[in-house]
Image (cartoon, rainbow, N blue to C red; front, side, top):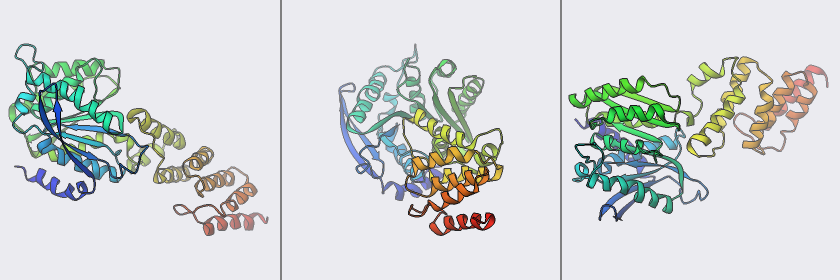
Length: 382
């Protein structure tokens, strides 16, 4: 039953070993006891002194931490998502009490109320004080803890932006509460939920009902994704849901995909250079992260301009490239292409020649740039 989940852990274990794992025992005044936590810091955390990182809080950290931490490290290595700090809270033997709620209001009670305050008032505060955290936080849980994480969503000012609910064991009234909150939220929220064809029947029934309710909402500030995995049990669905959830939350952060290229950039109603600017502006606004525009994204915009022959787009792109890759030939090349295709061959020739002494980048080197200049010289007899 756990085969697929175990396979995932095996696959990502070498990746985890490259990241920094810290094991701590923390003392909680709210719980009046100590708790074990595991923290994965991003690669090169100590070297990148000015960099700040989103935080992922993993409930059931005794078994969910490794799969989540492995996926985060693997995806961030390929720049599909930002690097993040992952903190797992071990709850072995304690999860039933931690996730407990009363039978009247169905809200955290007794140990559950104390655990709720421990996470929000002690653990996250400690993370902010000890590490360079960014103002974007995600919480992950499974069945009982997947229900529990929703209590943070119900607060007037939720401390988490992203919620990953894996086969939640929903408390009474929880579905209506979630739907009501998401329908009214005035801040962006990312909500992911998953079940499987072989999930526990009573859980699956409630999950499918909640999915129908959320799908009926009309709120552009809610980014929702739901998965119902074929041939997945209550436990094996976890290994498939974690990467799906992480991908959906950080969709805009990923490099420009072939789908984006074909369906967006090749449309003549879209300005490729403005699309690139807005993409990275969204990354900063959504996740609180300033990110240099990727070289491959510049090249995707370049290919789209060549394909659609919207040569005026090179003007803005050249300025952007010079800002993000100063001292290289990238901005010079885009500027030369702009002059060449908008009726200024002599200026284009001189711009290509200006690349001499600049750093090569991608397919651009001195020989390539001087040959472009010489071709213009031959064609126009300069």
